[in-house]
Image 1 (spheres, one colour):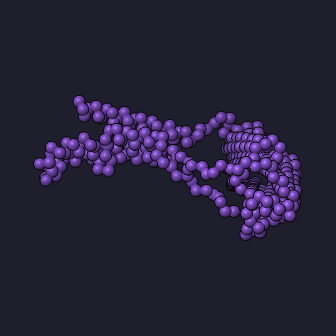
Image 2 (cartoon, rainbow, N blue to C red):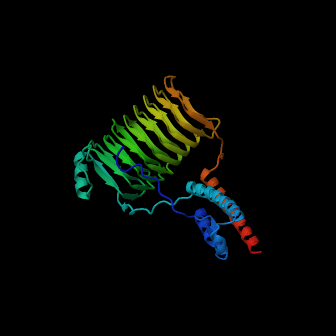
Image 3 (tube, rainbow, N blue to C red):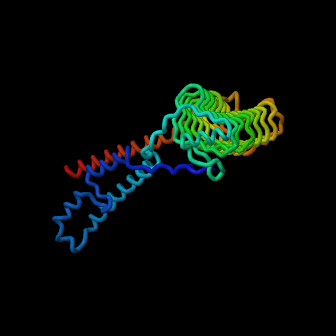
Length: 358
């Protein structure tokens, strides 16, 4: 793995239901630290003569019951709010707009790095780095071919390209933490013989998320691919690749393999797809293991092997048919429950306050 990921989880600050709770506390004068309300503190002033003897048994009992009620309710709300409500940190500097980048061979990479101020020297310890760029267009944004020097492409955005980022006949390229929106093929690795890593990228709305075509000995790990019309990942004519720890949601097929041997497809999460993993056309010795699949088309299946010899290993996968439109977003449920609890607590406090004033 290269430097720069994974990023730490954003911290949360009190907003939404939690902020509403703080307003209620301020409005009704509840002092949680001391376990008494401001009204109780006021009553204590004219009972100073009893202070030396300490509070009465009845006042201790009353304070304990109210404190326990408030602390229990507030603890539940704070717990739910900490899970459901957080605000991401303020975004950093916006990416720099760029035209298409075409690199052909190591000398061209060295020349363009010098001209554009890309840091690095092309070694494994000090790769060239292309970072923080934004591409918008309709054909291709970045094409890297015939390169063997070490290169990292990270923190870039690609919007609307037919084929956003292409790596051809190239080794030692790491593509990480980029965002690709729309288009047909988001990331393509083809005619390569290894050493490339595609990791921690987000693809949203392409037809094919990440495509390995005649590409061997590559690692595709921890990417997120959503809303692809055809495949989340497609491996075609490609051997000895690792497809690991990726997340696919909402696609016709999560991961497809064709004419491909000796690939490891493991610990991926695939949801809201017609079919999870599809093996076709003479694939040998692929290992499909430890994947979590929820598929929606009962006629297809979670893992389908068609026109494929029985020489693949399929083991330890969790496969579940969920049907169309089943399930619910857990975050929505938690937020709704939090709001309900806050409203109930607010109503209870109003009633309590009204009775005390009567």
